[in-house]
Amino acid sequence: MSARRSIVLLAASGIVAAGAAVALRPVIDRTRRSFATSSSPGARAYDLLAGAVLGSYYDDIAADCAATLDSAGVQSPSILEIGPGPGHLAERLLDLLPGARWTGIDIDPSMLQTADAKLRRRDLADRATLVEADVAALPFADDVFDLAVTSFSAHHWPDPGAGFAEIRRVLRPGGVALVFDFPVAWGRFETGSTGTDGAHAVFEAPQTSTFRGIGPWAVVRRVELAKPG
Image (cartoon, rainbow, N blue to C red):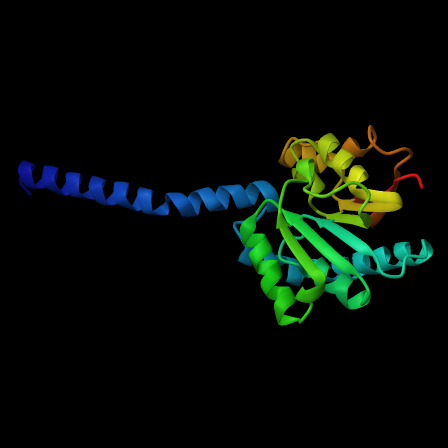
């Protein structure tokens, strides 16, 4: 092969590679953002993973939410879910609590779209509202939700203290937040976030227990946060 032909082929390869990089840049950016918020390459992958691996977790979280509301005597609750992802917990909550109104906020629009499609297929969308928003700046008035719940999300929050302050603000007096997440050490390792520890400066006497564990080690922690009535 002549030197001239080699140079032409190298130049053509460079142009093709540059064009592919430009074409793939939006995909790469979306994937990077998704890993930052949900530890997955995208909403579809997370939907499949959550359904296959976390289904029983969501069953038990929904039952826990229902029992918490029942013990408080709330019949037609207004529920806020932070980081609903593709909607696995949302559909369980709306099935279990036919009088409930559910609002989900997420910073990932693809997750919201996936959750919306899931709820529409189940004819649950008439009791659901999906909002693109950040937990650190909730677009709701004070004292509007009976229950706030979040699962496997808090360790992704860049400023957990601000997020928990907003959750406390939008809870009604006597309202409760239930937070299900990995131990704080995992959040520090994966994202650098203090996760559920951010609640301590905002809520009085958080009640922390093991939701799932292996022997003496907590795999998933449950944190209950109450707003005084």
